[in-house]
Amino acid sequence: MNMYTPTSDAEQICSWAKKAREAYKRGKLDVIDYLEFLQREGACFVVILPDDEMELEKAYTHIKHKIICIAESVYIDAFNDDPQARFIIAHEIGHIILHSNKEKVAIHDKMEDEANLFATELLIPSEWIIREMRRRVIKIIGADYIAQKFGVEENIAKEQLKTVRSRLGIHGLW
Image (cartoon, rainbow, N blue to C red; front, side, top):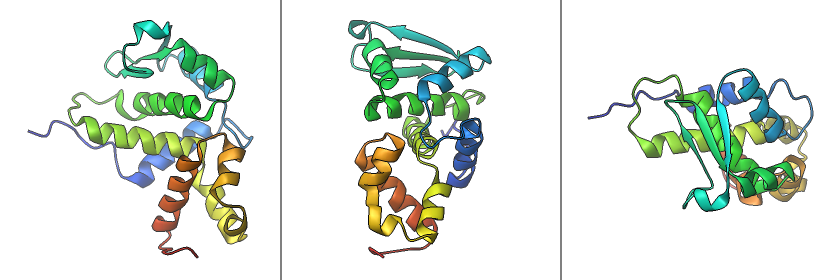
């Protein structure tokens, strides 16, 4: 039995990420500042745990209780702008923003996909990519430039480029 009510479509998830990002006018979102902002506003409670207490997870979210648990090394790495750590925290923020008001959630994979989409959009705004595509700059600069500009791993930048191009109906290389 499907107990999960979908958060919404991709456009709605991107809209939530845009709203979450609007307070930051600079190109690269500071996920630690944003996480602390959410905690101050009462949207979640953040717990930093020693790595050895995290078992296999680097971070996880207790959606029902709005608690984000993060391994100490991930928190420190995100503070130091490590791309993977920044994505991990943005992903957990996605769970809080997208899923914490749901009464019943059961489809784990769907929630993970939504949190990944949210994190990608939070860190790499699709509006920026579209604007740069119109200027034809991305054709020249590519995913490596985007990864460096927004402090993400190159595979995340490539995926965001692919997603935006697909939404715009652009297929092939250019």
